[in-house]
Image (cartoon, rainbow over all chains, first blue to last red):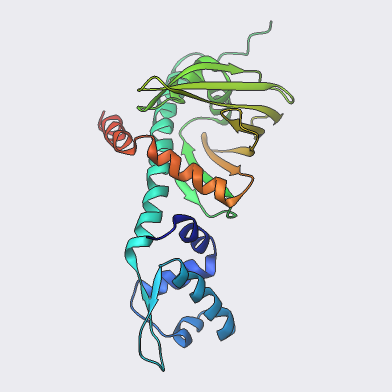
Amino acid sequence: MNNLDTTFAALADPTRRAILARLAKGDASVMELGEPFEMSQPAISKHLKVLERAGLISRGRDAQRRPCHLEAIPLRDATDYLERYRLQWEERFVALDNVLEDLKRSKPKRKRTP
Amino acid sequence: MTLKILDGAPNEIVMERDFNAPRALVHRAMTEPALVKRWQGNSCSELTTVEIDARPGGTYRYVYKNRDGSSFSFAGTYREVGEARTVYAEKFNDMPDEAVVTTTLTENAGKTTMRVVMAFSSAEIRNMVVKTGMAEGAAESYDNLATLLAT
């Protein structure tokens, strides 16, 4: 069972999100993952460890390359939470759209002075 | 006009959405109780009490009632109030932790972009908020939203 807090924390970093985006296109080695970033291999490895601990990636057995693989389910769980949270607010804001339409239709009203 | 959740610090939730109305109206709809009451509730929880004293140092209180009869509240104190920028410190159910919520409204050609930054006291609390938001009955929200969008 993956701890969602760990997943959220892992996703909070832009480099790690970029790594996941790269892995969504296919498995890659540490060296390949490091290329687009101006970052040392140990720095990349550190990010990979965070992602691995969060269950977001797994590492292959090939001792030389140890290719990284995106684990889609924990990522989906975390984004589902955010998506559902977003939809709750979206429901409110759609209602706010309607309020604004009514306000635009009614005459411009000055704030009442007490 | 979709609500976007943007990248922020680990303790933040950042949202952005456009509204097809001038900024002054959006600000009014967010600070006049009678107007707030019309949009702040949702299908899971009805907004039953709205008290707003929108000025620096003024307080506000929203009480929501769930379908099962239980209730919860958001209450806080305004630090800044303006059409361009409003800042308040908010407590959920009068718990000691405060979130600082900054709302900026930018008007462009009669439309308004709203950006809301909610800064919680820790990343753990931020994540809890995201998760609890979902537990309130997301399936119903989906249905209700679909209904709203279809009309």
